[in-house]
Length: 378
Picture 1 (cartoon, one colour):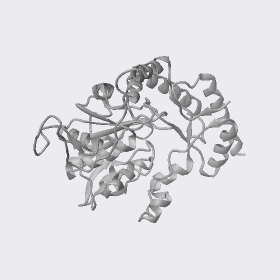
Picture 2 (cartoon, helix red, strand yellow):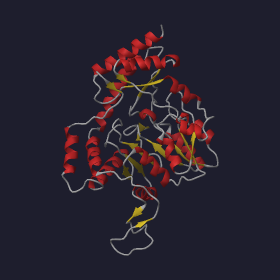
Picture 3 (spheres, helix red, strand yellow):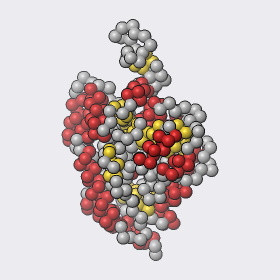
Picture 4 (tube, rainbow, N blue to C red):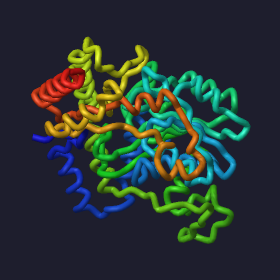
């Protein structure tokens, strides 16, 4: 038996949705793309959406639409996948890492404020594990300093903050549809926004910087005519992927409910164990529970991690602080230190959480965690 930390949930309706597109006139960009965009935008409460071929592409075009360029600084979390910072580098900007809150593991608004300079252009808060950041505080900082906010909601489709869905609050929000995420399109991503101006720029950057929109072109010669206005990319997504995404959206609320049930069972099992720290949850937030993170004693983490892997449990660690990667170390971040982020990283283990995880499998995970934690204390 092998239990991964996460996996996709695909049923026959998903398969049939893809088959129908394979038999249709469109395989790449077609009607399913726009239908999927509208479905997600309506769900999260945004006016516009632009689907792309990965969550990383979503972050990249969001930074491009925001006008990030050389000399600009963008503040983000160190506890995230590298794409949250790489997207700034792609545009020539400089990622600036603000430490996390030691309880929620999300970026700290106080640390964001401390890192703002005259060169700061934007903030990329990461809704880590699916728990929304303190968006009121972050939006206040952005308004105070005239900054754009680009939410990294890769973990958080369906999560809510004070009754508002992630995707309805910031200038732009980026989602990922990788197989382990809340829903999947295989690979894929999306940017949602309430700004028509940003939307038009996102559309441009998705497809080579080319448009047929007459309101954007400098001249018009005929219906065949198009213009390249920016240096864009081929980040288009297929109708095949979006058909799968539409089918997955039908099940999203059920997926989220099952993730919350699994998280509660973990919380109940570990809440009174002195040597296990369970994740904190804010009263005014509803997490998407993309990840379930525990913390154990630093000196025992590797022993417990290796023991769980040997027991057939595919635990992981999310994430190595971005600035600790060799690329970042070679390029100006060798002396970077976010104390809370590093402490968390040294103690963190990601346990299996995905909708198809059975109670029996979870009971086995719980049993092995408790056994190995107890054994590590001897």
